[in-house]
Length: 353
Image 1 (tube, rainbow, N blue to C red):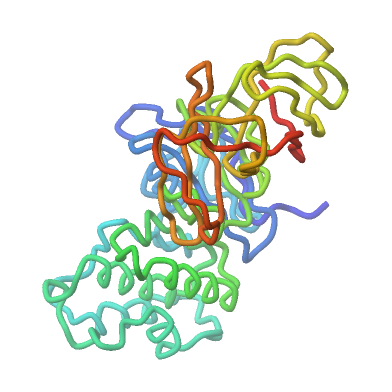
Image 2 (image 1 turned 180 degrees about the vertical axis):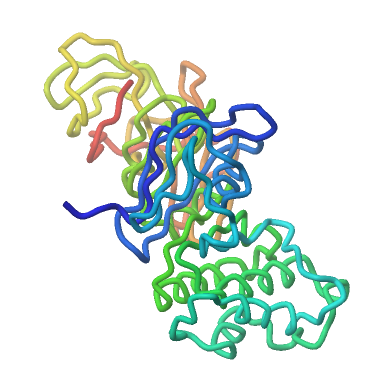
């Protein structure tokens, strides 16, 4: 039986004597995959990285990397002997060295002497930091410092790369491009990576898997698609904030009824007996706009997002429902106008609680 490349089993992630994440188990199956960890601030995401890196000890459970036990109650491999690289959110560049010297330190720390799949110049160019190499840390922006710190970590050629909010200080206008470049670098280097982020879109793009940490537990561990479309709890729905839960009654094998929206049809993810009262997850892409429809809702707000508008609509029961509309749509509804919803309402996968 093939072992997981990284395996965390029944670990209490603790810092300062306080358990931040309790009895956690998860794994990265294959070398070169990326796991993204999502959760609110202070929940323990960074503590997970610090523990895997060996900066915090394990009193319960175990951490294994590529079949080797790194941490347990009875064993602790020191950080410098793990070939695990941790890039902190605050970049931690040495102030008395130039950016170039800071980055080169990564290559010098490559204890395994692996053959480089990407050279210094290629990583520098992909992260767009060639113009700051001769500068000192106090002369560059926070976003540039983060990218320099990331370059240093990549050059160590670690078995496992741990990134704590690696793009949090990058300008929004540049962030998506850097995400694309980072994904390209990780793909070429085939470095197994764990990324802590508060940005769900970033996690969905970069991660092969996503872990949602809430209330001191891993609430969901799954593919990004499943985390978004099939959240496993109300807590995950509320955290992702990508939809609304509305009351409904199950009326058949493939249908339910809401008093404001009428009949809603689709495929249930979980079976509910006819007559069950449930909370239906309604996401912005589930409803379609149709000015000719007799189902009209009041426009409360409209946000322009470039490729689309996000309308907030109010039902007769004062439910506030988000709806996506393509930005090329000619009729842009204003606040207090009526907005038509296409009938019948069909949802590919019906998620209820």
